Length: 514
Image (spheres, one colour):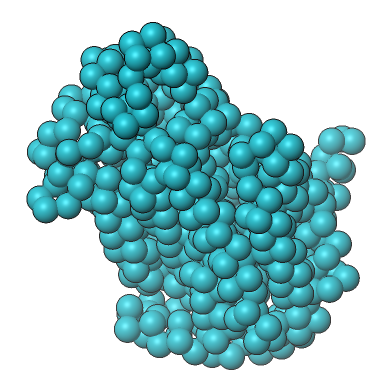
């Protein structure tokens, strides 16, 4: 009983009645927890699977007329942008869906198995290193995975507006859900690099090992790169093969864990605010989208902010592996962000009430831009500088956490705004914009990560990177974040929905219905 009362207080729900209840809210969050197992292994590790396990990041590997690393970069960017612009189509399909379970819930049931199959297919160990056919097959499978994932992702986030139209309760629901999603992603992000680093440790040389071997052999700096390639090549091929199987096993384990969570979320949630009128066409939904100017400002901000957290994507993993020479350090990088994220979960309700969601969003991103600027100018090449960077990462968890929570609540408010303005809710098309933002962020993160990898002239086969390459990797990863943090705050100065205005709109909507 005490636990139930605590959960009611957490979500802001009322015991009994037909409103949202804690059991249902938790089921929604559990589905998101499992969903992020799948999303994270694809979003954070498919790129490094291609560059380091299949060795498309090795010197001399080409796909057509471009290097293997650049081919990976274009694949990540192109597929994610293609996928992002599929979201409005899926949003329209959701708005036209009519079943006995509602219009959003059924997709959790229908798409769990297809997502599982396509996720495993992306990491099949049958792919051969450096083989062009392997790249082409994975590219096709990845595009198909992105389509299948979208079919579940768009209605999942739209479901929150069907469960409750109370902006406070919905904000609390999304706050807890985003925490669970972050936890799901964090488990994968923290433990997988530790596993891969340990299973491949015996196949790696550190800079100290290489320097010692070179000194013993009398090799000078000018011939270092060729010497390293000769000494290490055989070991790196074994390392790549081990990585390939490690990622495959990890994908299978995560998928097996995630699928039951999709079904649990379907079974224990309920849609209360679903339109039963004639379903709108895609063209009509797109017109609705462009009438929702508040939503478009959020979308523009999300696109401009695509690179604000590139260090948590592939680029951060490359930095840990090739500059810090320990893949497991990527786990520390992501863990350092967690305390700030937890602080954000506490701050969001308070900041929303004190300053409104709009100003909370603007303030934390301006703060994040300043923190990253300090981090950029301090650098990384001394222990004390790495300590400064670590402190900065803890602080950057605040804008990251606030962004993860507050944008979903703001988009929920724009659904109410759209209904107030037009008489139509359009949950599907509105929340399709949130998944579009997320996917563009992942696309930009992966693209900048691999572009940085290429610009730093890293050889994935030998692990060779020069000091100039290390500087390039650092500068590109951090400076892109500085620019993105400041840029994403600009559109939100023109956003006009406040908590008071949202409550007034909901009251007017209810009055019209009566």
